[in-house]
Length: 317
Image (cartoon, rainbow, N blue to C red; front, side, top):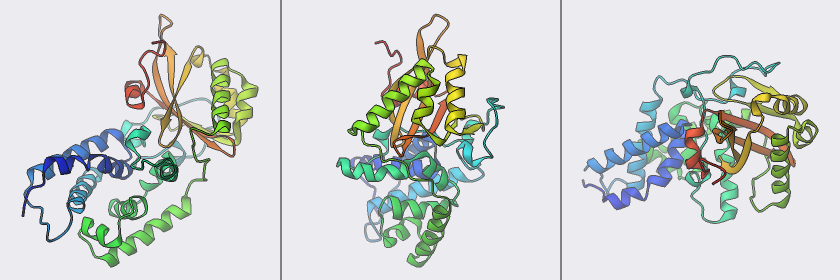
């Protein structure tokens, strides 16, 4: 038995963040889980090199921390998971913050240095995919993330979960069946160097800021969806969404600055304050599909997280 050097533990902070986020669906809970894991691992002298690797030992601690956090918690979701589409612009009553899958900046979600590998990883951090993972029981979720997302072998996953290889393989099959039954429609793989995608996003920003209903309708898919956590309200239909977005006086004077959210294009939305100064208002995730915009998720009340996404507090500075 031995303790593990802090330098070796610190090297696992990034990978643990990517694991815990997929387990928990929350940026704040992920930070708490990773920090608790690091503290427990640093204070423990129970690592046994004869029984497995440091990585598997630390992931076991993280898995137990996540499972403890998930006990009694309501499933995090997107609005589309909670009920049918709304028929008007009435948002209703906001739900508690812990009901929603939260956005994460790309820099915290990807391990790959090769741009081609990053493109392949983006599918597993899409908001709809993370929300779908939350439907799985925690241990089954852990198996699927370890095996299909992080690339652990069945033996290594079994070591993490203190389980048999047979039980891990069985849980993986059940988890895959759930995901395949409700897997979200594939979007366009986001490539910041793609000229067509850049032009689409430019048109989206122009239509949004100028309240151009015709142009907004043109850039949205016919079956596009939009939602605004923390409200369970959501809409389907490009024309309906365009009319609502461009006719609302609430967005008059709002501005958008680009970022990347959960592997897809995103924006920081700034709203003028009482003096007309633009202030952080919301983080927006925009998913392209078939050369148009297929989904918009606007995270209201997320202005305090702009720095995480590389967005300035004042867009004019």
